[in-house]
Length: 162
Ligand code: FES
Picture 1 (cartoon, rainbow, N blue to C red):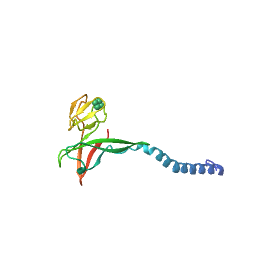
Picture 2: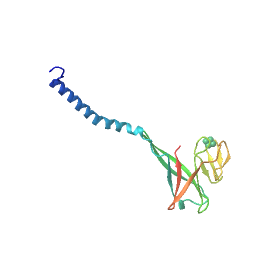
Picture 3: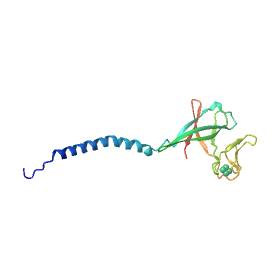
Picture 4: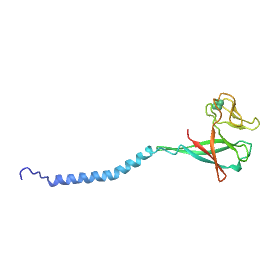
């Protein structure tokens, strides 16, 4: 027939094979690619959360106590676990203050020295009073204060990952 195009059986089989191959490749390959790149597209764990520190009653009134906790962070395929500390100070039966143990100068960890009644930074000998205010040394500001809440007797802090 003039003007009509005939394809050979061989060309037809080649085209069908190529089409089926493309469909199978897409069916297997796209989920595999999605699986491989999906972690890189995740935003990771939430940067802020309420972190429980323990029963409020377990902290002695008038004496700062170090509470520690860990937070895990997912960044693509990498998961890291970081340790943090906070000083819990019950000022009375009903009033509680929680201070970061990170020095506001260059981020060393401060320690409570009960004989001096001060937090002391070992790096550059900074001193903070029991409320976290700078007494001496290079820190530009007081220790950071966490927002707190008590639910069913459990003290929690609002932690924002920096
Ligand atoms: S890091 Fe604490 S005084 Fe420098």
